[in-house]
Length: 239
Image (cartoon, rainbow, N blue to C red; front, side, top):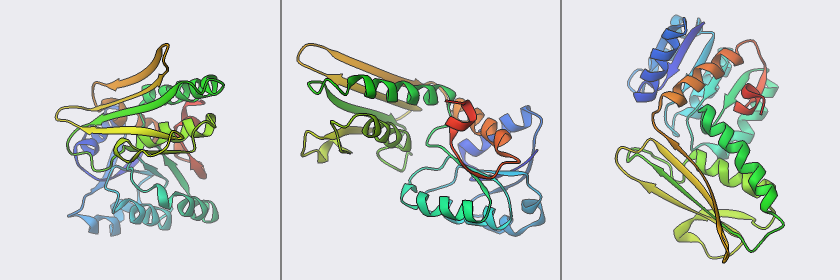
């Protein structure tokens, strides 16, 4: 399988190493100072693209992949407001898009646990929900895409809340407060706490390395080739 890497920072390089280990080849890499690579023959020969670029470039990258009939796996976050439009375009043009806020298998199992816990706790409004997410200092968006996904999944499965906000902006008991911290040498940590006067329930996921994100992205790319439509890691993992 020939892979185009859109974004060639730490994650792009890690994805490259894992892809090569799994027997794939890299058709080309595209970074902010090498955008012209998207107009080369090497780019058009790719079987799939993997995007870990930036929130400002990801939508353009997706459009380019659609125009060149290249399935695209997107791990870049911070573009949720464009998702509905992109989904419509993908389906209308019969292209393939797989997007996820986090490709780690462990995190996606954590997503499933979070949904189930939200359902179980709905009858008990005395438990107040709060979230915390911690990432490295270079993380551009706050809260993280993973944090937003966790919060939205709670909202879909527990009608005691109608919104999420950053902790400092909370002004209603129907809002889920998210504390977004940025610290050096942190890969990614997420926790959800249900707090009552009697006891607390907390679930958490602590990533030790980015390798799980990179490996999951390559697995997603392998799965996406030959398909049409819009997918997530739930489809890949059967969750």
